[in-house]
Length: 162
Length: 265
Image: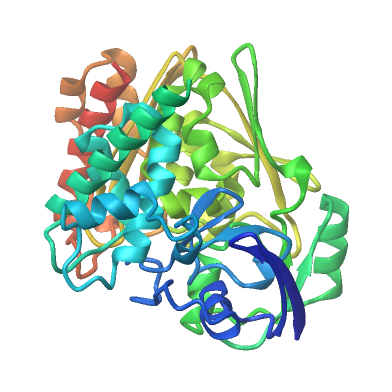
């Protein structure tokens, strides 16, 4: 049994858990943040993607104890004061989801992708970078559209800020 | 997953000491193989010694043509190192093909080579580059390090701390990825150096990563994708599974070798 203390969506949390507890179960069962999903549980589908210290990780393949002391962002932490994050808004606008199960992982992946590639993101890169996220409904086209639109939107925001 | 006890090491010495105290313990680097294996109950270490918070294990350094990569460096950092790209772009390209972006944020070069999965990418790079594997107690040539499927020369409790190699004149890597797992169904790393050519094959060998002497000789004579065409790959020594037969893999070895030479330029 370990006491795991970390920051989740800007809030410092501390919970007891087994050393073998996965980060995704810690987030869902201990913290009640159920936006992060468990799909395949084998590191393939990407519905469990969260950001740990600013990098996307599959939280079904990280132990909660490994994440102790880190800064974690989940899908619940994206929308500031209730306004949709530009990536969330783009998924809505471009219908980048159908059943919605993969969406939290897709959105967290897209935010990380846009952050790393800045304005250099093109369609081929988006498709390559979505390799670790599986969607069984959309055929990916609208997801790719949404990511590119969000990138353009955020790039315009960055330029306006400069 | 069976119960386990977690320990976070602060230094290499601390990690080796912790490992020595737990006979059934395992080092945990990025965990991208180990955690998955534990979830399937195929591994059940009593203790995990986390190496991810040891600063000495992280980072890429380039001094002229000499490269050193800390064992705890994630694939994403190898893929994204502009210093490394300027002397050996092939290893950056290879690192960028491992798994997916999330796996590349956690998985490390040291973890990959210590595990020596027969379909992992890094063993091909290490063998192809003629790298030296540095551990907490000695230096080992890649030729002596990889000893068989999931087998290495590492002794009980021995830990990879870094790898080092001299950047080759040219190098390239091509892999045919398993469409589901992204592991190499067959991957070939080629490197042209002052003292000859090295060709290392992963994903295909029944005993894990191996060098192909025939291709090395042919490419040393003429560095061209066509040189590979006349060489023989013996299916008898290759893996056979639901994904590909030995004959299919033998053909893939040649195709990937050609593409790797093309990638190297």
